[in-house]
Amino acid sequence: MKGKLIGVGVGPGDPDLLTLKAVKAITAADVVGYFAKAGNVSHARRIAEEHFQPHTVELPLLYPVTTEIHRHDAAYRTAIGAFYDASAAAVAEHLMAGRTVAVLSEGDPLFYGSYMHIHVRLAPRFPTQVIAGVTGMSGCWSQAGAPIAQGDDVLMVLPGTLDEDELARRLSSADAAVIMKVGRNLPKIRRALAAAGRLDRALYVERGTMADCAHVPLAEREEERAPYFSIVLVPGWERAA
Image (cartoon, rainbow, N blue to C red; front, top):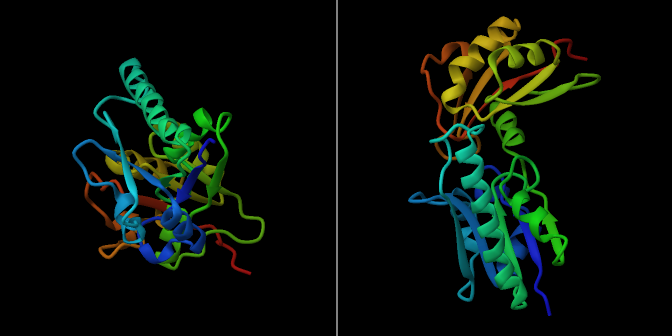
């Protein structure tokens, strides 16, 4: 009898933001898989580890590359595609043995999450469930106390990896925006916001919901790089009701 695959959203960082449903799934799973860069600790595991049981079999899924190669490079696409194939095969081996496998995902599993690459490969073959998680962006705007959108505001979610002109174009037409994948793209994001006339409203949030979180107006942050867990918010609500 085939096992069940469960994609579990563990939220943005604060373990208290795990949902009750996520905790139940992690506690009951035979196998818990989680992503991390080779040589690094898994952030998703750190959030959920207190709910692992003595019987839990851990399945680390370790990225061979992250940002060392440009995402449009053929070598990157080949390496990351092979990684997801191998990860899906490792999960499938447990599923074929009848085990329930919970694969952890920071934030929500189907929103910029690595889990989705496992899901699309295995969902046609095995029983599957996805447990929603608190997204990083909602954790960050709650941390900053920043009402992000109301009424007819249009909220746009943008990856900071977009070209600068494209970022500026999209920002100029959005009432509110969330910019993810900040990291080394921070200077470009700052210039695009300035070109779109939105820099004065932009907030920078670092490690939202975690113990060492911080948030400041982006115009006041002078560093040229940002850590992995960072996000830029452009609140709407310019005409508060």
